[in-house]
Image (cartoon, rainbow, N blue to C red):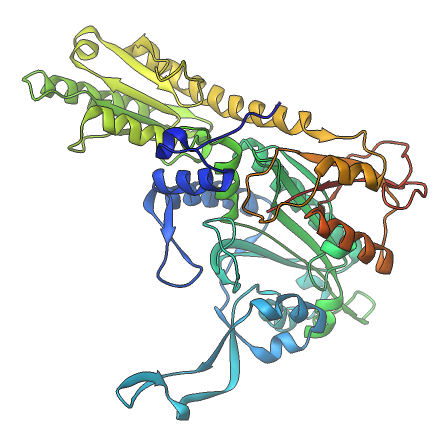
Length: 519
């Protein structure tokens, strides 16, 4: 059964899951609200996590044959006007630039009326249109295909309700865009990226996910098919952690992306797009955090082992510091999870207990406390951040120095696996598959909370057969689900051989779909 999280140790008070989340972001020194409406300032520890995500995922993207590039932040409005369905999906979130300079008028700095742009510019919400324009120039022949590119960038979507990392007006992401000669090649690319995201989420973020196809009403605007990875947070809600889209030829037709095939005929390219964002950090927090704050998987921890010297303003302090510096150097020469260990000696002028608590809240995987006895006896006393607590007493253990250095890679790998196993057990045990009708679904989830930020009762997800509804039938189901604040998440890639009756219509089911509340 799902245990309830509180903010008791993080802030000294109890509260809802959203309260806990905000407290962890703040106390772990990850990010803060920006003076710019809806935006965030990502602080060094939070950005360090993003850098680890970026570096490890970028390596996978490059190894799969994609090249990095960069496109402008500003996109002409006319580019979006070419693709009606696409622009409709983003119209309410677009930030628009209308002037190119300011002027002091009546003592106030205002847009200069004489500097109005002939064509407004959209601050990038996504780059399909401007990249499609480039593809139309880059691609002439079948010999130019496939085109496989990726960019790391910021995007702006003018969100009404924001929450740090999960939903902000400006956020960071990677967006991949590819062009192919035929549908088969493009669909293969789309699913290859979906699998890359799944493997990355599970092996690097230690965040188990379910990969599958989105129903028609949840597709990316203009796409033929949208696929996602869905992760379960500790409040039972789903987090869409990454998406991969097969765009068919709709964007190619809008942007005139054509190539001459081997028979000399002009054909439209089949394109894809895919991306993940800083939302992954929010997912890591809500997947692994506990009542003491953040718990980071070692693969993305900016510092995997933090050494806190227990200094007492005595002559032996110098020996402790020297011992700690040598330990850091020795650890940095070891490899864990495929890379040199990231170790740090914390020499800040703070009380040792405060420093230890600081790293507990930040989620450093291993925290070492070194005192004069450790230095004199050649041992290391440490705690694993993933380990359970016994009341308020930290479960520490001691090892001989050389034994600890040799064991460090395995310890970090064990922590990585333990975090994944814990989250996987929660995911697997909280998906109901015995709910057969909409009435049962409504009874199980109960009335929708008055406010989406209410803590509510943990419910997890429901996996049920459905008849792949489309059009008006799907719209009607969507309205019923919306009243319960439920959504159709995705159709998992792994499907059984037989299906029961559709949970919504009673007709024969053709596949199973996930249903739940979501961020």
